[in-house]
Image 1: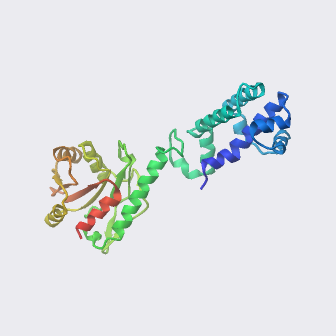
Image 2: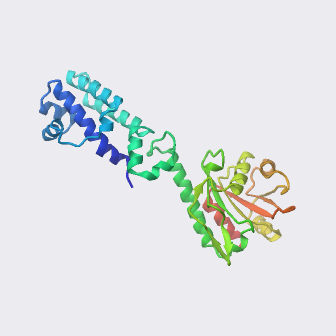
Image 3: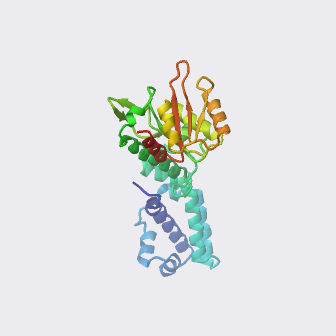
Length: 298
């Protein structure tokens, strides 16, 4: 695990300080004066000046870094820029370079798992898509563990298999829905999970969940189980609200219409049709809650 702050400390900071110390020395400041302005020791200034500190060529060659060094060097030397302002300006540049830019690229190279996430983001932002995605994946993992530890769940798995899915907060398509790859299957009375959760690997259950959300549901997770009269009775007995849809109609449109008619639905279900197995879809705020609802059925 490599933190972006480590990249800043190891790659950006030595390079930036060396460049700024060199700029200030070229403007006639003594080592002592440079040390005072930068808040470092004179020996550190000496090391920077004599090239004894390893620097990063990509940072040193970045036009924005070079421009900031020149502006701060001029301002600090003339007394027009205070050290606090210089710090703030440097921090602003660091945050800019961390967002899908130079430092983000260096971070990805140092920690390759980040390459799975595309886009312009800062990994430490509270609303970072990386953070949101990893939270959803962790939620599905917790839900899967609940299912694996629920005695009798295997008997509830439909012939087509079950899946546990959870969406990103503003998911627009199945690529933004995390699920078990393939399906959870009943193998000799045991629920068998084929792999770790991923995004974009469930077409069926993910589509039902997205259709329910399109109809007004605020659910972000769903789990499908076999459906019969005893299942429906148990769900009603647990105080859950059910909404039925037509198995032989377009499934997405039918689910959306069913939820529009029953906005507080906790379960959407169909009782089968020609070549269509009866299935109930348990809707919930998150994957662990959807998995917990299975325990009302066993």
